[in-house]
Figure (cartoon, one colour):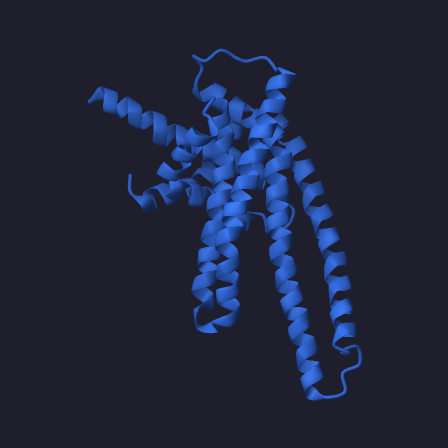
Amino acid sequence: MSLFKKFWLGVRLYGKALSFTREHNLWKYYFLPALLNLIIFISVGFVGYIFVGDTIDWLEGLFNLNNPINWWQTTLNYIVKILVGLIAFLIYFKSYKYLMLILLSPVLSIVAAKVQGILHPERPDEDFHFPQFLSDLKRGLIINLTNLAIELSITIPLILIGLFFSPISPFATILIILVESYFLGFGMIDLRNEFMKLDVKESRAVVKKHRSFAIGVGMTMYFMIWIPILGILFAPIWACISAGLGIYELEENSIIKTDAN
């Protein structure tokens, strides 16, 4: 399958995720992820709002911009507010994204397991074991913190390039969105990989193999999050279901086709 077809698969499976939910009556799994995601989104936003206000007040006092008396102070005041707002937004979204991936992973892993259980009826259902739950939580924490470090090492230079070389800032912005989308998709695909008992190295290999699919899943989630109410409540669980369905189609159907040939 071509890179574009994999990307488009990651986008269009969101529609299938909804029909899959209806078909298998998965609505009861929606409430807790939706509630937790809403709490995370609002909490991070509240902290960010306080941070922006305090930072702007501090910078205005530092540069004596509280009562601008000439054009350059007025201009500098606007620049300070724009830069602080931009940086705060970037920090906010990254903080929200990784808190969501880490804190929702135990809940979304249940959804991912349910989806894979439907797709793999031959696999026996596993009972809940608290030590295994803690192990999976630790695994998710390690993966997401590692991904955060990798993502920051890529996006921070892109942000600086976009700020200081304005002609190429649109291209830097597109690359930042692609990187953000990839790691969002990574987090969703890893929930399925966790169910399949893949270790961290194996999980990374699967995501790397289907990186354009991961970008498709992550980019759809990226933009869906900003849809008022609907996105905040349902984007993570739809992304989780879409990722599970897509990797099943890409990985296991390809194996079936190869065996048939």
